[in-house]
Length: 104
Image (cartoon, rainbow, N blue to C red):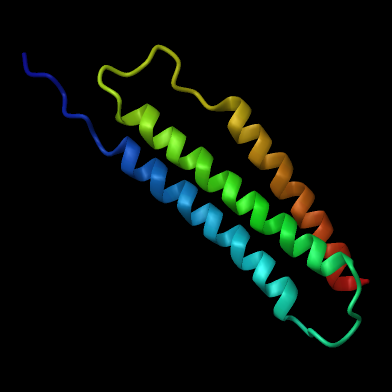
């Protein structure tokens, strides 16, 4: 019986986390670019900075996940529940801040 190949889990994970990170980063850029001279309040730059921080955290989490999934043999625990929940809450907060920043 042959051993199954390592698969592409680590590569798919890295691509997904990087794509998410870039999407959040673009959100921050759009907050700054959209009508830069109209209604300039402190909320937009704060939201953009928050987006940059979240994008960096997502990228770091993705790199950690890629390293975990690339290990052979796989560790006993490979789930990332806490990381995914942290990113989910942060992105939800960013959505709320973005909505308030764009419409206020």
